[in-house]
Length: 132
Image 1: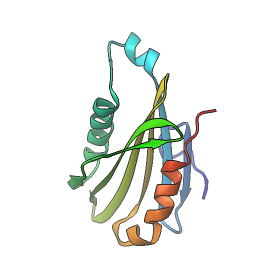
Image 2: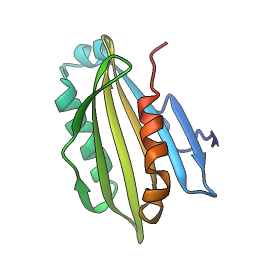
Image 3: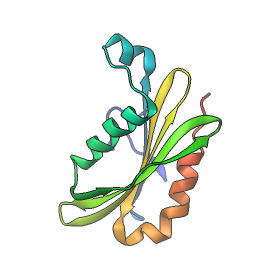
Image 4: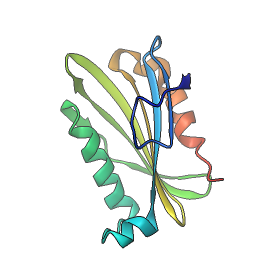
């Protein structure tokens, strides 16, 4: 995968491999900035916000119930979102990670037909998030 700033203008990290149809972005939101804007998310409400954004980009979307976990000591929720982007079937894995001062959206995606091929790699990407 290579750095790809064209994926999302708000992403702190963005990588792609268009030949293999594999993509990753990480979006960071400061809890202080959100609170200053009058928004007080929990990990659950932040997940709802992030997953709705993805659902708005695809048709026939389906979001699995998020699984609670820990990623490098931080509370996390991970879910699968499927749907159609135009005529293409898409497969997303969304990880929401809450640290003391930030929320992170770790979003990986590929074509639905490649989900078996990349599912474990997608999990590794989500689980590799570390705050520096």
